[in-house]
Image (cartoon, rainbow, N blue to C red; front, side, top):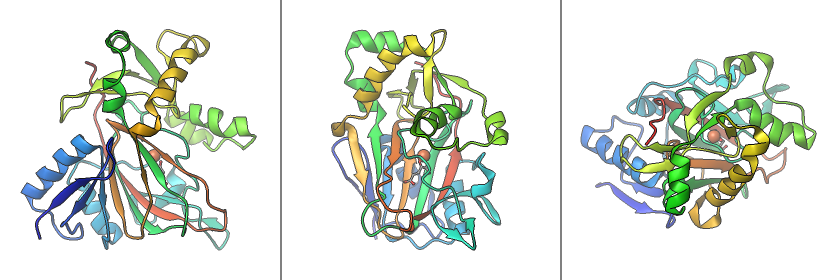
Length: 286
Ligand SMILES: O=C(O)CCC(=O)C(=O)O
Ligand SMILES: [Fe+2]
């Protein structure tokens, strides 16, 4: 069967058909997928039947794999697999519940953020638990030339603890990041506009989850422009909302998209996913 790639929304994402990810992917198919990922930002593969080892093997084609800083959510025997799950078995959580329920790009709080992430659906709610993706090329392209130029000179601070403070502690929930994880993730600085290494296109590299302020400015000073940009980059026209099916594998490029998991299902509705994370490089300024 030949490979077909079709857009799933005007702004971002494509559905890939005709590829079985459980067996070795030939080099020409790999090249097509690599190009499609950088162009569309998100690739959806339906009806894949993958063991953890096969999931890891396919991910590994794209680079070395991260071991997530939240070590208690790693799959036993497969430290490359980060379990995103609200399932509790014998009183023990099987993974990280409600991960990424705010807009973010994976590991943007690291000096070398993630290139891409691959999430595989093993148990999903009948309704709900979708994931949204937004296109950061389009977010950049649709700004005025004046603001584009200004942003090209700015750098921003990315901080894992920011999401905790902003999205959890403020809502009265306990901080979710323990001391060890906190120590391993000191704030880092990245250019606000980056060049994608594959396409050479410019993309905005900020996100509401982890970007706390502009470099050399206070949070207070940064807030008005950051808030404006966060609103801009998450507007409905830039988004694809993925409605998960069992055995979906979704591969997203963290260098040109941001994503948001939607927490709209009950605590006793199981949602269980495996994620691998492909290491990336330090973002390249324009
Ligand atoms: O559960 C999801 O849909 C995504 C969670 C998330 O942000 C991630 O694992 O990177
Ligand atoms: Fe994420």
